[in-house]
Amino acid sequence: MKKHWILAVLAVLTCALVLAGCDSGAGGPAAEPAPAVTQSAAPAATESPDIASESPAVDTAASAASPSASAGGSTLTVSATESVKKMPDIAYVSIGVRTAGATAKEAQEENAHITQSFLDAVKTQGVAEDDLETQSLNVYEDYENPQQTVVENTYRVTIRDIDTVGTVIDAAVAAGANSSYSLSFDLADRDSVYMEALARAMETVGSKAEAVAQAGGYAIVRPQSITEGSAGYSAEPYLAAESAVMDTGAAKGAATPISPQEIEVSATVTGTYIIE
Figure (tube, rainbow, N blue to C red):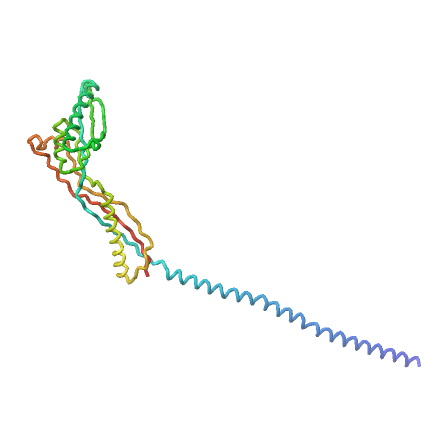
């Protein structure tokens, strides 16, 4: 009897162990799929935004390069210089009086007397008081004769009627002017002549740009910049040395011959143009 009871207990324990093993096997496989789902979802969530963000960046860069290349920056730079020539209408004479004396006072008094005489003489030839300007006044010891003092008083005389230049010089010499003779010509309104040259240069630079662009197979879109260059001025200098003036025909009753040349005023323009 006791033997049968022991067998019965063993049978119950065996069944319990079998049932416990079945329960643990069923719980293991059911728990494994959950981590697999979590791992596969994580990469999908991180990779998808990266792909989406890279694609628009490439498109934006491509569209920004296109307008810059077409608006380009192909440019053409040309320069043009134009000149206008005019006969001078004003003259400047540098002329003065040189005297020497045993003392500075003696030389100065004589110089003042002769200077006033030559100024009065040029005024009689139509030179206005405002057109007489002291250019220099020097007092120094005579290098060749240290016992004497030299005084030089030089004036700049503006002559607005160039047809009278010869007679003005002759009148000054006849009144005692004897030093620093020089003569130059100019245009009273040089600025207006320069503006005329500048307008011509502006027109020429535009025509030149068109011609160069067409020759290269391009068309001008618009000017990018226009630059004014430095002004040019040229005139044949007329210088009359002291000996030349003293040898003029004034002593023979003829006016000193004066032959001014044309004055050339030039302007330069540089233009940079966008072409396509």
